[in-house]
Amino acid sequence: MSIDSIFVSSGDLIADRRYQWAVDYRARGDAAGAADILEQAVEMAPGFAAAWFMLAEIREAQRDRERAIAAFRHARDADPGDAHGARLHLARLGAGEATPAMTAAYVRRLFDQVAPRFEQSLLERLDYRAPQLLLEAVAAAAEAAGRPPRFKAMLDLGCGTGLAGAAFRAAVDRLTGVDISNAMLEEARRRAIYDLLATGELMEFLAAEAAAEMRYDLIVAADVFVYLHDLTGVAAAVRRVLAGSGLFAFTVETHPGDGVIQRPTLRYAHGAAHVRAAMADAGLALLRLEEVATRTEKRTPVAGLLGIATAS
Image (cartoon, rainbow, N blue to C red; front, side, top):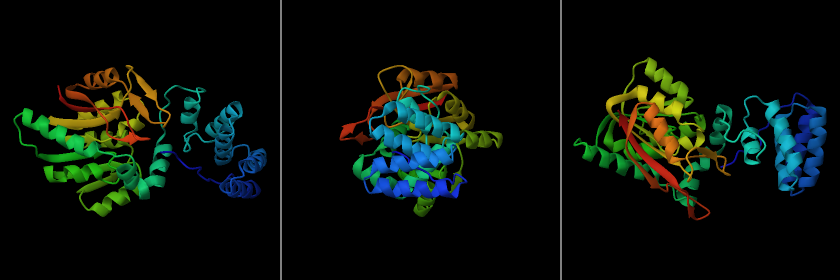
């Protein structure tokens, strides 16, 4: 998924008007004309992040790498929240941190934009099946432990539109979902399957739950960690709200190396060694970590890992 240019006024009405003209020119296929107008806009308003970002996209499409990098840097510097993800694009171009963290503003905007078509894209175009794979793995882990595959309280991290919640609903008594995107949660509410839906950034939500001494028998993260560059912190946060005999089930995209890389899609891929280390550091024992493909891209399965952990 990619994020469209986000318009936030430059504070200069003439610069804003030029930005809108550039949008129209680009939509008509006149990228060169759009770039000329955007250059006028950023000359008038040097801190105009949206204009710099669109200009960077156009320059990259024109194969003008150096000027694209310069424009992405201006977009990054003009918006500390980096809602466009300019830092991620700089990393993709080899001109910044190798694996910068995605900002909350970027992730929220991304999913607010795609929410209406999110499920259709995943299910019809990407053959998404993480929830079903996780459900089967959790049932197998429960059976191996000699316990029924039913849980009193489940937390669905990054619940999105509720695909994982729908898969697990019959196996849990109380279902809580949290997501950073209000638009995604609106879609989840239409399912009417969650007992509680909360808006929030994952780490902040988990910290609040730990402070309130909330505990969950099952915590699920279906393709959420592709938006987190380092699993160490979130694994520790999960451990603090996981019941003593609870299960933590998750998926990640992966790669043959040990660490974390940013893929061309801007999502992160975590090496198996990083996953194992993050769980161990958090005091979580991996019951299984196996290779899976939770989705396809361009008709090719995306390499991933499915993990089930419990308190060690």
